[in-house]
Length: 342
Image (cartoon, rainbow, N blue to C red; front, side):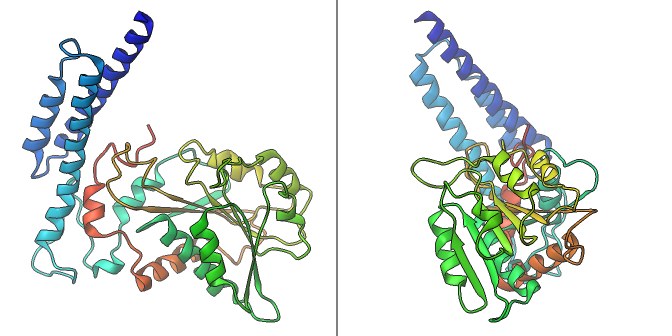
């Protein structure tokens, strides 16, 4: 029992120190809320692990985490209070770390600083890959804009429709595919046990959409080796590979996965998409966020479809559909300990 109690106490101490360090990092940004963050860091550091039972200490830590969340959300609220949605020529919109947001309508707001931060995360693929990162207002906004943009770029017709295979189970993704289906877009759901059909179905796929962990009751995991071996045997057609890593991030080995898809005949265009809400924000759920990484290899099988072209197209679609993160979201997420994989 004492060993268990000691382990719990160590975990509580780690949680307290982490919350205190997070508050200190926010204070070090030097924003208008520096005094509040400094006070919060000191308050968290004073939580005494020895004066209360573990459950009482945990309650104090939960309250401290809630205070952290409140201070972060307040950054977004202050951004909303100070500016209209239309471009303001009188004063710049400045993030807590001092960087300025570009002058633009909010529905199509450039979010370069946020995208640079997201692009610095994770393990990079080996040489030969180029990567482009784009942020969206949510994971589903990202998937929707990707599929609609690929439809625009591939220019399908009734005689030659764009075929999308879906190895996954997320109900909203299934509903989206049904919504997009028609004479020029054909969608098909692949059963968990029928992974080989992704590459060798009766009709060649143009887009393969995969959930490494299927969103179902059994949480079926992707057999990556089987998928890659099937790819190396040679698909009937070179598809675009879209991977929704929402349930696997940040443990999903992006670099190793895309490297494994490089074959003697070349490599496909790979698009990784995920929701950045639950597993990227220290459990605080500050803002909905969609993250897209586009990977193209120097020996691309479809060299005309470049990562840069895809990036430009989905950014244009993002602005048209109003699927960009809001200024308030960007400000609230502008803390060193959010969207960080350390």
